[in-house]
Amino acid sequence: MTSAAFHVQQVRRHLETGNAAQALADAEQGLAAHPRDASLQLVAAQGLMALERFTEAVAQLEALTAAAPETGEAWMRLGACRLHMGDMEGAVDALEHGVACAPDSFIARLQLAEALQAMDRTDDALVHFFRAVTTAQARGRWLGDQTTAPDLRERVRRAMTIIDAGRHALFFNAITPLVEQHGTDDLRRVAQALEGYLGLRRPAGSPDPRQKPTFFYVPDLQPEPYFDRALFPWYAALEQAADAIRADLQQVLAAREGLQPFLDFSGGARKSDFLDNARDLDAAAWDGYFFYRHGKAYAEHLAACPATSAALAQVPLTRIDGHAPEVLFSLLSPGTVIKPHHGVTNSRVVTHLPLIVPPDCALEVGGVEHAWTEGRCVTFDDSFLHAAWNRSDRLRVVMILDTWHPRLREVEVQALTRLVETIGTFNTRAGVA
Image 1 (cartoon, rainbow, N blue to C red):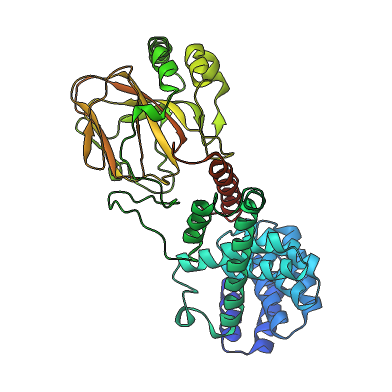
Image 2: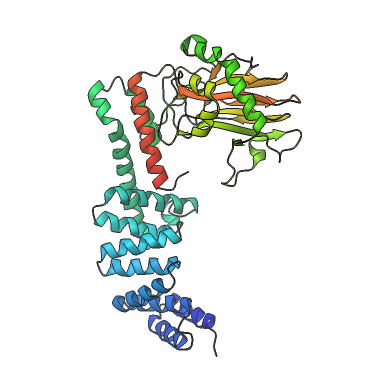
């Protein structure tokens, strides 16, 4: 008996040469001998589609998806058939199943976006247009006519037009009510920052070449590696609580529970890209005991450290759903160096309250070294190139927290909060890290 794989190979060869009738005949012959083979059922459906026998193809694919619902290609083919038949709701349902099984299938995602657009589900369509294009471009496709199949070029151009218009409208609408209420002058810097982010204007680079935020740059904020203490009236209460906070820390260190790596390497990055450790890079070089991370409160940690929790309640922390604040005890192991890097934005700043500082530990921002003093806060702009090290033989611990840039106006803080939340929600839906 001829194997199912042989029949599949023959069918695909006929489809590639445009001989759809022979492809279907070979598929049917193979199915007579191997009626349950999913690969043969799939290529049989492709033959039917090539012959524009869509009703029969739909029946074949519906049976296949019912029997093997994890088969992404079958769902995507079913979606394409239903599109040809004008069944937009059915197409969307099938294509959503398909891209759930195979998230990187950018052509199927483009089809899904087009179907959603036809149903006037423009917000959902925008997300899938964006993800289709960014996924394709990450693989070297759809970067221009040379990397786009001729039959897709017009559709891809249309997708990019929809993406540009849709993202611009979505993000500007986030701040429009504040612009209408307060006027354009008060929000000029935020609007210019958004224009730079969207590529509508040449990004206004910092006048200081040491400052290069990786995500969002607000122009005309005085660039300063370190900030004057006078800008932070809440320092006094935090520093007065330093001994009590250190007592909370000692309880954490004694229990050694709740600590987690500060850095996430699940995306394929290497620890050595960010850290040096003269002793053992595989050990816990940089750990955190988080009170807030990406805006999420760690209620158990706050309850376990009552003095710290009470002190933090006096600090005007950055509050952005899904993003901020970021507050933790930062534990840097002996012999560890955090390599120079830039933060994401100059719109918020980072404060350290040093709690345990052995000799030969320091912070460097914009090439300017700062030696921590236990109990004395320091605030810096981490969009400047910065690094830190613990070259001692003991643990170093500082409490890290983030607040808004002290030279932002309150209405700018409101606008940036809305804007970052809107961008973050869109990027999350679109699968952007």
